[in-house]
Image: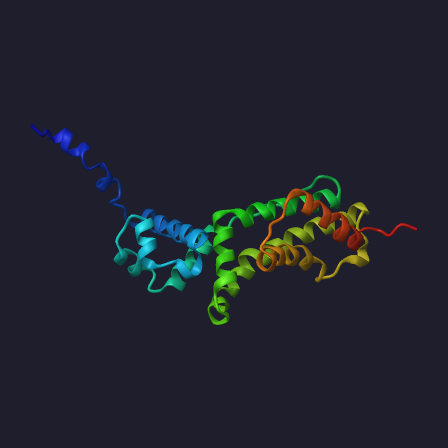
Length: 208
């Protein structure tokens, strides 16, 4: 005999997946990030996202009429925050720790998703995401590097005449170059070498 209790126990999954509003939207956005980080821009499909979110394809298309619309919102919702600039008492250590934090963000699911967009999209599609990348990645990174360097000037371990907008592009450019062009990643020793051989000579007072 099947009781009402046993019948309810037999269909817990269908009940748990009856989601609406922000809960369902969050599941779809998470599924889009998962797809981007595993199969890339070229492999992402609206059907695959719907399957990952355990919902119907119509639920995805009702909210996002195109793949580009979905990815834009998924990246905006998922990009990690780098928080405040580290303060360990020296520009060398602050830059080192900030780079390690950036690396963690690059290796996160949203970080892999963003890199898939940057690496795989054609120029016209990538242009759509330009403002998002600037506001969500580039500007926050430059702000933190500027905080570290400005604090170094106040302490006296950074030359005031070393401040230049190009200086703040060096670390992000090097990290993205190795990731995108060379296909290799940054270990702690690589980060330390970049700081010691590139950034410290660029910023710190010259001996003699």
